[in-house]
Amino acid sequence: HAATLPYRCYQENEMAGEHIILAGSGPSLKAEETQEYIKREYDAGAKILACKQAIKYLHDLGYKITYAVSMDPGAHIANPKKIFKSPETQHYIASSSDPELFKYLEGEKIVIFHSACGLPGELELYKKLFTNGYCMGGGFNVVNRAISICQYANADKISSLVILVFEFSF
Picture 1 (cartoon, rainbow, N blue to C red):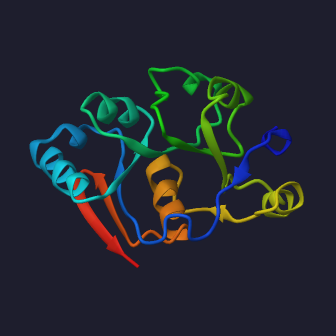
Picture 2: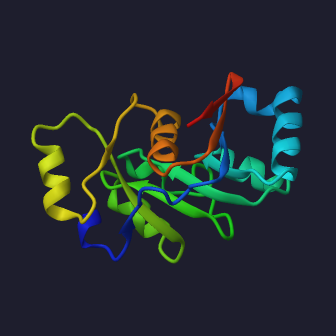
């Protein structure tokens, strides 16, 4: 379905030079030390990449959400409780996502990425149907895939807010 839509695939280096605060929607996001870290780094120029419910949570705290990542193949996430339509957010959506998610996000800035699903021949299919056949791996949850996206997009620094704050530099 995604191959029939007018959205581009994400590109290598599109986050080059950026510090990305990657926020999952786990309980550690509400921790005082996490909130202090987000404020300090955001005020210093870091951009926020939020996953699922973290989009609305951080938006409601007054942050601009630059990027969001979603990859669930089920139609159940195509609603504001799961994925908030935050102004100016670029949504990275897995090509394997349900058509209802693309319909729900119609009119938003959407960029497609490929999430390894383990299907036979999936890499060949991505290469055949899309101009960019690169496929993100790294585990089967959205935060792991978001880290892969940031790595491929060449972010300078990734601060992943999962349980504790981890920083990656490449």
